[in-house]
Image (cartoon, rainbow, N blue to C red; front, side):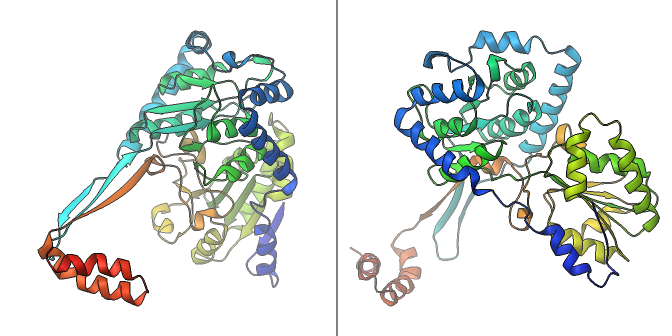
Length: 430
């Protein structure tokens, strides 16, 4: 873990080192993924079944790739009632927030007499990738599926690996809650290929969303353009801005909540209090003694973590903007005032009682967020990822007379004579 201070002579260089290499995709998986995708495209279900046997230790014929409705019901029924209630509460809040995002169509006639419009339509189909095995996250099912439902997507096809044939009850319960009934027991780059290109069993989709390992991320990168994707997600990250009034243990826990995700996750504390910085550093080490995922969290904290002391809010804000973090916690008296200085962040969590974990599960806004400094130009998942815009123009001869001559001039200037004629000949009134 690095300790930085803005008063250090080499601070700028040290900060660059902390920021460097975030989101750099290893080239080691590029060729294997390319080979898998080509194989899926050529052999379809046969290749899909071969990879499922190889990677998930599960032998099954093509007709068993889809998880049956009875299997979904049986698995979901094993989830404890209080967990079902927690999922339902989360789903209700997520659906409500994303319903509030739905945009309105545009339809008006301008001063030239042209009727201009823009209408929103949903995608026809979306593929949901859900990690399986140890990394089984029902919250990701809710966050990816519910905005699609709100947007009006008719077909949702979900792929979730089931290593050794074990179906995760929580994932099935979340899928059932979201109305997702088309579920396949496949994962990895091969699942992305099946969703993108289609097989005899799995029809292709228009967009693929959802988190995964390096192979899944690279597969999404390679199929982009043939289908849409949500993003290429990197390791999770959080920046915590905290003042001296905070409990060091709670700050330490928030930092470790990100560190326990992945060895490459990044947790950063920014504070004006050297005393808090020292106390949090000690608190992190104490918590690591008992944390169940301590091995992962320790490596993340020691390799990627940082504590940065600053002189004022302006310095803190500029450092936050340099990180452009996926998650930003503001453990301050006036978090909203400080947030006005932030230009780049995936999601902001304001106040001492609003840790990032609220957003992971029950806040309402989506937890699929831009990582690896991509918040400089990207946003979190929303209903807009499942919608398309179509514009329209309608005019008669009188309207064309007002704008057509200028269009013909511009077309001539670009050397596109047929374009110019399509306007000028109509202007003659024929």
